Length: 412
Image (cartoon, rainbow, N blue to C red; front, side, top):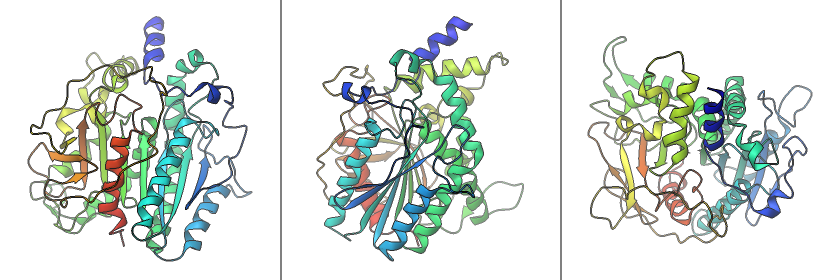
């Protein structure tokens, strides 16, 4: 069993390897508290958490100085003059200066600035919510940290600090009429979902015209959710955690016509990490069960019963995904992120087929009219493997999707 566990750990959730120059500068996240970065038209704030969920840079009362600085920037921009994007990274990443996720997130902020210059001209404020996903300099040693890092991420989630941060940002964003988008990847998606799921469930139940203890009926008022949109990319959490959301999404009468998307889950069909190694790892965790239920060992993005859409090129005639293939593990730059993205105008609205950045969300099951909760499958052309989340194709889609449902009509 020890050998099997080690093998599972070595290959599970193989993450993006940084370039050699980055590896030469790797230091523990505990070494430095990151100061804000002023870019051309944006500011990037770091909020760093330790393994117990405590803020790395906190005052005598335990409050985060980094969060306070971010909130100050939102207030200073004035009503309707800012847009905030939060990114929560996954395993093998942190807030180190040369971390590729941090660098690529800055690229996303730059692209948002470009779109804002064509529209509302709001100040873009980035929040890089970081935990100690990388704990070793050696790649081999880092591969062996999966179980420890999974335990850390769940401890952080249970501390309530992430819910605290996102609630503070959400409350201020609504008051300031500032759009707020939250993005999580892999274990970062797990952390985000743990933080926002319970409040959203409570909101849906209170908005639902139902009789307690009986079947759900129609949701009377649009769901606000957390921020304007939560996006989870190749999330590393079991489908069982999403079961209640799927119940809402299957409500026969659906949601009101004014409902906008609030939770978008995207998973690719060649993500070996969540397709193969996550179930093997969960079986070890659940070894006391002779036959664990599929919902406990399958990630939400790979659980076919929960799938609501596919994300495909707009010009594709069929609704079939491309056959999965092994991701390119040795490109010239293994973590290359898009730096130049062409933005066009979306073709249609939410309730009909619509193109965003050359991609189209196509519904794959009936029911759940106007549901704010979307679980979409895609293929290597959009997200190539577990870590291909910063491709030009995907970022173009995300930017146009944000432009349609967030930037133009932020939540009140």
